[in-house]
Image (tube, rainbow, N blue to C red):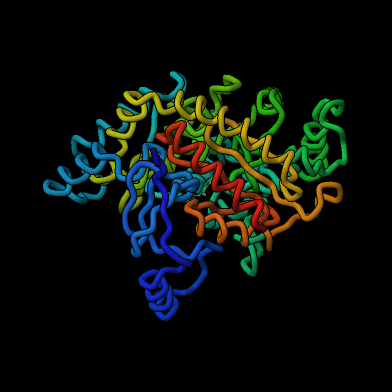
Length: 439
Ligand SMILES: Cc1ncc(COP(=O)(O)O)c(C=O)c1O
């Protein structure tokens, strides 16, 4: 019995997609990243149908957004209901806002007892940095090479990728950037088995050399997302936190991408029982409906007084209804647990694929966020961005949608919606393996 859910009828782009891409290029600036030539029409769970009727399994979740699955019926229903009642009233109170905040606080560690809502990940980064500066009266922020916190000013300054900064400088003063433990390409050429995380000593050295004595705090992702799905060794985040505590510095953890079950626990911070002062949250919080939040300890977040933080769309009824129902879905469907279970299965197969393929240099990840780093040659580890783009096309032609990230643009992101089943995982891995063999 054929249980395959994917089907691609002909070469891509299909005729309707082709027409849409042509129209698009005539009216909107073409600044999006590389993508398969597929114009999406509708999606449910992990299955995407394009405007030509082709069906694909999605390994992108948008960009790690649709954690509860594309167009989850309960989410759609909640949004439809609120849309008939109230769409926006700026900061004025409405029931959905309170419910969203209560639900969000209920799934956070108890010390994070206050939140406020904005709309994008970049916005919440800006706010967290503003709070760290306001609370301490200082202006220096430590952040990491390869980090990504958004494209607005403070976010791009804290980031460690060149793209968001290109042609934009000078960036904000007070940035102290230090290397992240990218063990596959260790900046210190150290052996992770024996180095005892010497990159942490370098944080100390950098601060000693660069700080004017005005350190406010630090922002870090639990793993580098846009930087290439790079995971620090176990214990590194905890030791970083201890280093901060020893100096009385504030700690912001950017869970915009890693939260909402992605790593196999509701929050990535739960793996090492971290206790950040502030957490930035986005993407999965609305699972497709634009929403974001900053959560923190009351005495830290409360540094902003009345009238000192808002955004036109933040906490609007539509977003709030989504935030509330997404928490319910996550819990009821045990999606973090599913991410852990299916993630293990997918990781095991990806490691087998790595052994067979001459191009897969590294496979790493947790739960349902895994990176497959492509190289021209396993010995030299020379990044293979051209091959990565080709793989995106070949995978789509065979029914799988993937995207890329990374400092060198050579890391495939394996990040399907958390509702993916075992059968869908295997079907998508079969396609991935076949696409690799066709390069
Ligand atoms: C870890 C992290 N922080 C912040 C952002 C910025 O989010 P947004 O694109 O919603 O502004 C992103 C987006 O990819 C992200 O991955």
